[in-house]
Amino acid sequence: MATVRGRALTDLMTQRGHEQVVFVADTNAGLRAVIAVHSTALGPALGGVRFWHYESDADALADALRLSEAMSLKAAMAGLPQGGAKAVVRWDDPDRPRPQVLLDALGRAIDDLGGRYLAAEDVGATPADMNGLARVTPWVTGVDEAMGGSGDPSPLTAYGVVCAMRAVVTDLDGDPSMAGRHVVIQGTGHVGSHLARLLVDEGARVTVADLFPGRAERLARELGVGVVSHPDVLETPCDVLAPCALGGVLDATTIPRLQCRAVVGSANNQLSTSYLDVLLMRRGVLYAPDFVVNAGGIINIAEEFVGYDREHAHTHTAAIATTTARVLAYAREHDVTPLRAAEFLARRRIAEAGQGRWQPGDPAAWTNGEPLRRLRPSA
Image (cartoon, rainbow, N blue to C red; front, side, top):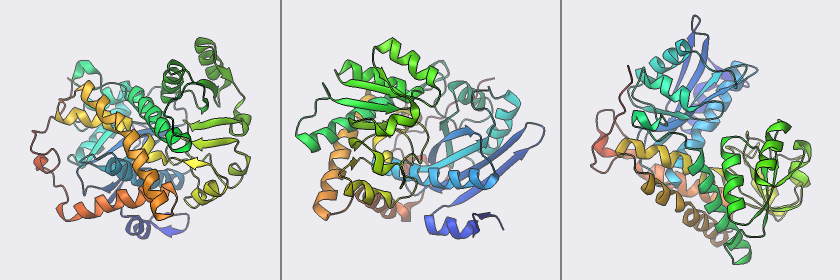
């Protein structure tokens, strides 16, 4: 039986509520992947495909389990009629383009799930990857607009982070304006770079950092913002720290070094372990749960299956401010951390829908009667 760090996989699945884990391998295509479906209680499970260098299958599996659960919580808090899943692919160089033969093999594995899993773009993936998958399966989102999709979800993810920041600074100071506030962005990839541009437009003072210094320096020159070395980013004094790279950056070692008033970022699973939200609270740092903050991308791509409308996606994403404020208010009312409040609210919605679990072939159960709009694979 498969294990994760010594624990039986089925035990972990039962404990965390996962429905299905699929291991995929294709020697000829060079594919090694894990697809984890956490929940379809609210609808088909939507989640990104992550191409990353994993040291072992156990690391890839652990990441798939953690990320897929976070996707369920994210969809639930965003009010979407969808569950959560994640595909992770062992790929030594995320910047190296994926050959079509690999995307074909992965697409066939996604297609075999019959719509239980809707693939999307994630770390290491590109719109080109989504287009490649769409040649094999209709169960993919984030493809080019010319193919009927919504394209890159990063701009709306970044916009949602700004909306969450407004709610957080309102909670701190009673003023939603970002003008004059210092925001430090860790990670200047797709989302981080868009976030920096939006914040500059709002009059914020922005500082950026990246594991690859050249990328941060190029963005800093373009926008006329500050830059700090990656090792020093967490210790830079600021109003808001925005982790926008990989997860696990906040742990028992880094949290005591923080010099920010709040953490509001797009990275998934920013806390290396969940109990660290208490340590943040004791430090006086307000933490906005990442799966609430970064829901703009999933909101955007969810629109594709009911007829994509960019204006509607933008309006729905703006509601992240209201959702964040509701979480912070619930946390104060019940004397818990914002993370515990968000998890409770999300799991309650999933549990209430559990008796009506989505079944393939019944799209009306998750589109409020609207017809399912399936993307056609390109020739």
